[in-house]
Image 1 (tube, chains in turn green, orange):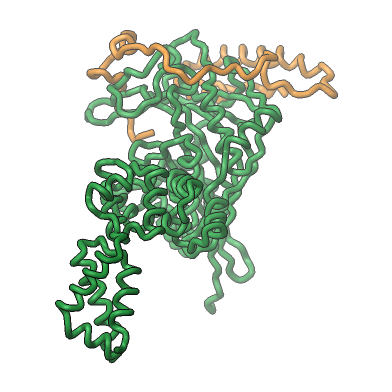
Image 2 (tube, rainbow over the protein chains, first blue to last red):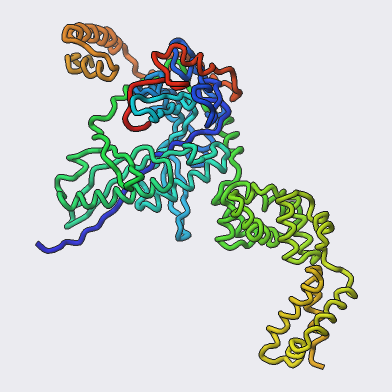
Length: 493
Length: 99
């Protein structure tokens, strides 16, 4: 049999769980806080005592609607709560309050930037609010310990359409979602603290000889890092293709249906958990203890107004408004604070180019050293703007500017004060600058002669002399004045 | 609408609810569940043309609480009714896999 052309298309959808950064839990007023001693943020509502009444957290509903709005979702007028029944020790009520058929947000999309500079629109099926489960602790070999501090923490589940076709696209979607929820201030989205968990759905559409084969859909449960997400999708695509090659007719969605797998991060493979036919029968039914959520136009409008500018729109604006390169613009939208700093500093009259250079230069290096974001260095827009203006006016040279940045990060203070204290202000007295220039020429007769003669080495020698003047002046000579003076003094005589 | 409640259905529901049922109980519960469903089926006789589906029995909506911390229990209070505890954790039979 001759080898037929085979086309393989990966189909990936993603469920993303995001813990919302509210002060309190979804249906009771216990604190929503990671890392507290076990079973101290608990009350009769969240440990499943009989006869209690859950009450919705207004902030959690608002945060969810914000995410929905930012994802270009419809925010339906009427949304309700349902009970999803299953038995598990970390779910003390034996049901989870969730949303089944009428979620808070539906039918949206997210434009996701890809590493090659293009972007792809991934449709969002829905985003609904539910409560998180507690935590099982498996330290003891004989039994399991349960901590219910996390039980009842508000959890937003965002479900995409199967619009991703590569592990990279799934990764980019997840990362963009992380940026978005942080941008909106609705979640810290800290992976180590379990604020974000991923469940990709993966299968292959394989076309050979005019026939389309669909492999069984696999859902990989509970991935808690970007690395695991990328690894799980990558492994599934390989595994499904290999299995299909063995049995193209039998290994099919029609015959095998769906299957759940887990991720083994030691061996970097997915492992079988269960067939979906054996899936829990959740017996959803409307939650009688919670009334519906009704969203009217006024509420929708206030949510819309509270969103502000989103990352990709801001990137486009920075490119147009400040003539940033695309890499520069990307760096300015890594989080909301960074771009806010640029906006605020320029609003105070600082030249954007100077601000961008400071931020992406010394500040960026300092942020990397500290392992924090640019916006968290503690440099204010006022400080940054004053520094940029001083540089623009030639009162400081670039080296002095960097020193001032370091000093501001370590000790605070205004750039002007710091420049005075560290004696960094450029010398405005022309006579003093001229004296430094004369000294440099006198001390370096050979380079001076090379400049005068205009020979091959003239350019290099000129740069050397500028450096010497800067050194003699202790960095206080304004470079432009030095260059002018050197040029006039060393022009062919 | 009232599918016959077979013994298999009763056993399945029992399993989901983690309740062990003997044959006698399966027979009895099947009969009772069937009676309940037939009773509720009487509602089907009502003409609901033009009546919007109702998702909740009460008319009120948007009952929201401020996101302000209130009083929680201490670990000892929370664990007071637990059949077993391991330090400040609820202790349960070994669970395989994590949630």
